[in-house]
Image (cartoon, rainbow, N blue to C red; front, side, top):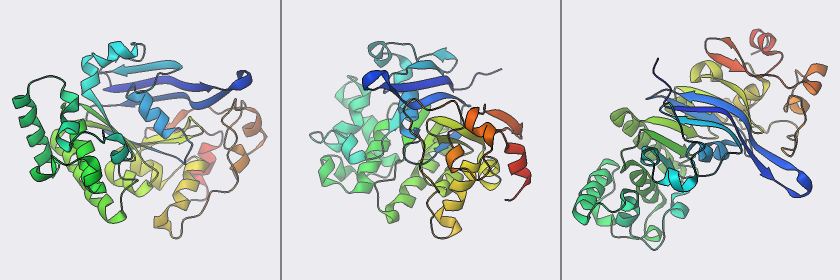
Length: 317
């Protein structure tokens, strides 16, 4: 069988704190993306979405677990070694705020070309011109610096910079979060069109369930660094089996006025061996307070980390 293009296995990122404590930002996440697939990662702020994206792109080092690209382990490669590895060019990242991610002293042209290294001015110039046209960035803007561009233009520069290396995997961390609503739809449509034209694989981090439904084939729901639910996007968002996914769906603007989820999350610092959502969950029982549920497949490629997933799926929707 063809291996997944990207596979994360029991991936962990723990940040050390004083007195021997540790913040569990990503805690035992396992995911697989097939070539050409688009996977959305959703969850509240602080759920670990951005940390997971940065781990997958090897922008930060994992504490434990495996990161396999095209069947080959890359998670254990030293950062300096990975910087010279072919997978570095094949895995590209689009940041949440392009204006902050771009070098302010470089022109748009130089920011786009930076990923090419030293290939010669003529070759770099042709590549920049081609990808700029592809993302709808006019040639007259290429000599401007980031602060001279609008938010939408900065976003296009960030996308062009990621695409110029011809990546097979594009990781996007809420790429339109800093843009005006009027610009967001245009940029999202551009990304979706490029994915369909180029055929690259996408890991798409977002807090917007409607955007994930439009942009992605599958979805992974994170809560306090752990997977709550995964599966086909329509299955998970139309019939969620985890109480947390249900709460996210109920709070979405498409359902009316957004509602805050009840209660406060548990601390991610050395969390207990329990369901981490139990203190906010209307379905919680004593088992939820004393036993952490494992992620298990229950139906149609849908996996849920909930002791009562079957009951919830058949009950009130």
